[in-house]
Image 1 (cartoon, one colour):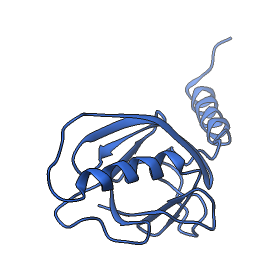
Image 2: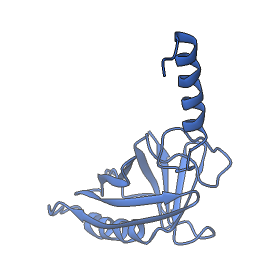
Image 3: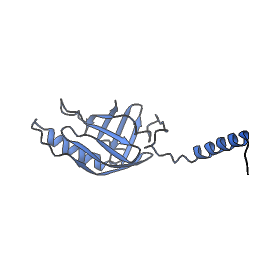
Image 4: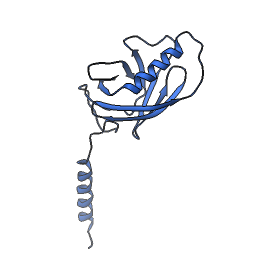
Length: 150
């Protein structure tokens, strides 16, 4: 069967519409935007930690999380780099197992903070995005890590 240029154009438009209807709502993908606070896009920005257990990170440390479309997370834990799995569905997530580099930082409290950060990140099963803020925790009512998009 031969299609003229109009038939071909119509077929391409219909294919595009069919594929657009197949969006699974995966928040790891770049095409979702939810400023309402449940779910939302976590892929794209580098998220910089601004609160751990309700306290700011130790001065002079930078803790980050970068989520990728292939269900991965990586970043800085304050001293070491970390990496691992991170699967997300709207409002819910699974993180880990995580691995990291093995440098030792001598600044007071940095290694303790890093260990706690990685524990909380792996324990996160709930998240929300409100504007440029990402909140993670073990439940929707408990937030243990707060990040800002950079």
